[in-house]
Image 1 (cartoon, chains in turn orange, green):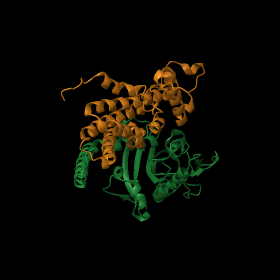
Image 2 (spheres, rainbow over the protein chains, first blue to last red; image 1 turned 120 degrees about the vertical axis):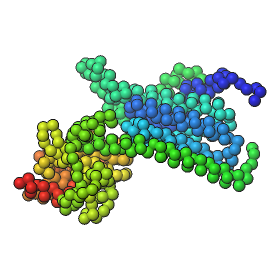
Image 3 (cartoon, helix red, strand yellow; image 1 turned 180 degrees about the horizontal axis):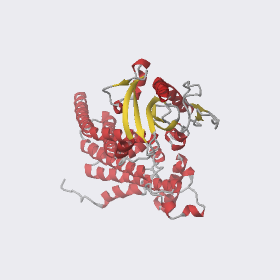
Image 4 (cartoon, rainbow over the protein chains, first blue to last red; image 1 turned 120 degrees about the horizontal axis):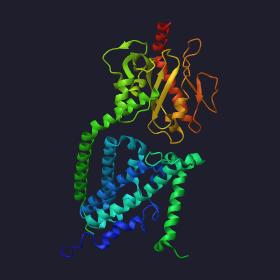
Length: 215
Length: 237
């Protein structure tokens, strides 16, 4: 450990920032779409879901990374699943105790974090072959990249679909309904989440050089 | 890569499982009181919602104290049962028993205008899981004042519509007994209910199985209460 690198070396910072943009799990790797469509009708569940995934992925990444030399390769997927499932159940229990309303809105989707491909993907691809600290950063980065998209989509859908932000009727307050504006009911339906994600992917690809593919 | 012996794999998995089990059971035990409290508050909000009172998690207890002035438990021949708290009764397990063995909760609410409302519990099967709720009746034990339905896992946008305001509001002022005093419950009609009818409401389009389940739930549960309702109607006369 003599060649110990600084905690926030540029390589480590990349682990944190890459998934927010050029390596985003949703818009670039197109993982975790299912939950992104289902729970982004309103902003609050999107934020809670984002936080839940951040907790689950960062802790699971650290645990798996710390155990990586002890885990027998033959049962590594089962061990990974067990760690993820434990974390998800803990998060679910905590939500039920302290944020009951939101946990009801999220319903099965908290439990379904277990099957979120982003998490298994990061454990298998990164935590199994890296030290705990980089694994922690990688976990935070990837789940934050996922959460960021969730929050953007949740924000747009709640604003345009219900005219509210976090339940605050913002469009009503600024009087936009008086000039003939109406909420777009289509925004509340799942297909709109897919279309918004599509638009985000389009904007991101056209603005980021690394992502422009040559034909 | 190192190779691991079978013994190691067994020992490793066993230790993992024990640690995980200990962790989860501790968490479940520590958090259980808080979770039960939340469920109780939700139940109170559901009861309040059946008498058309909107509440939040914060003021639910206070409003419940204010509006729900009493409760008692009856059996299916309408006799009051002592020593049971109406709030503790799980309607789901009661409905699995035979008619004679069921004990049924009744909550009494006094509205601000002095009217008394009687709230009864209902529980049945939807498409994917249980559906349940409360039906509030006026003092004539015939006219519905309000309803509140909930579900665990009905399809969002289809069956899950049963706990929306528009669906619940349809039941207000409908009658569960006909003119001759026979119990007829409420029918959920596909393709639109007759607006003149006193015991029909619109079913949910795309939610046929949930609608059927809800219709059956109302028939079975309100049916279990009907002797009590009839006795009360006689007393009213």
